[in-house]
Image 1: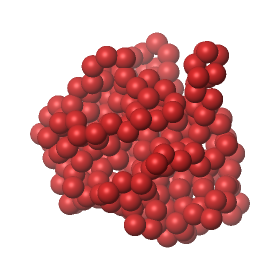
Image 2: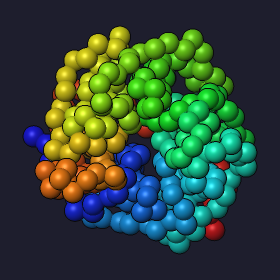
Image 3: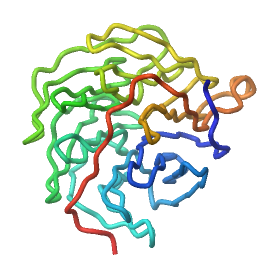
Image 4: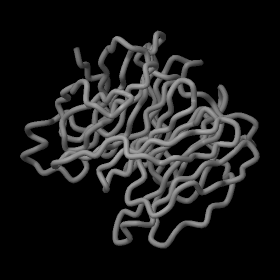
Amino acid sequence: MLKKLTNLTCTLGEGPVWDYQKNKLWWVDIKQKKILSLSDANEVEVINCPGQVGCLGLLDENHLIVAEETGIYTVNLQTHNFNRLGEISPEQGTVRYNDGKIGPDGRFWFGSLDDSTFPDTGCLYSIDVDGKVKKHLEKIRCSNGIGWTDDGNRMFFTDSKQRMIWSFDFNKTDGNISNKALFVEISGDQVPDGLAVDLEGNVWSAMWDGWCIVKFNPNGRELERVSVPVPRPTSCAFGGRDMKTLFITSARMDLNQQILADAPDSGELFSIKVDIPGVPVGSFKHLPRAD
């Protein structure tokens, strides 16, 4: 049964990550410039950010790594100080960074997008333990959901504005990707957004304007649709002590009053129990810490 977990009403909830050390979920509200967390004891924490944070990753017990609109930072969870890491030269028109995760190579992977007039200037980057940034893909319309299989040999990546999810062979040692292949193309009004991967290699993709989460098998065949009470689920992440809880973020951005009346929980966080555990997302270590 689907559960609503909060009453935080995010404008653009995104980027959920399960903290396996603290048994809590982290996510962001991009437009409200907030980092949010919910513990398994239902304790809520809110960190106000200097700019829009598109995604985050675990660093250590007291720090996160985040892709903020002006760069990549570590965040001290005690002081809420932000410490800037590697420099990135944004592409023309790029407004902010979007979805991302820690990969099985230990790097922080994150994408960019343009919110206005330059539709093909998004890129996919990673940053390594020395703060070195590498560009992996360019000419992306809307860099979005990313995830890896449990063995770390396959990566999935979403370009939302193309309505496509791609797969790549992944090198866990050097973080290189190769053999790009179309995993699935979405038709109609729904748009693939954030995603998560389970231990059997199934891909769970949030469908913006689709009122659902769709589960695809490793070959891209649709297996299941989980209906949600909001039109714009944005992402999903596995968590819980057994990794069998699927957390779902959502948005209320740009919804008209009639839709909000029909879907008043837009922007909230939800969860549902599943049968197959998800692939854990690791942590990013050995970086400079925020003071």
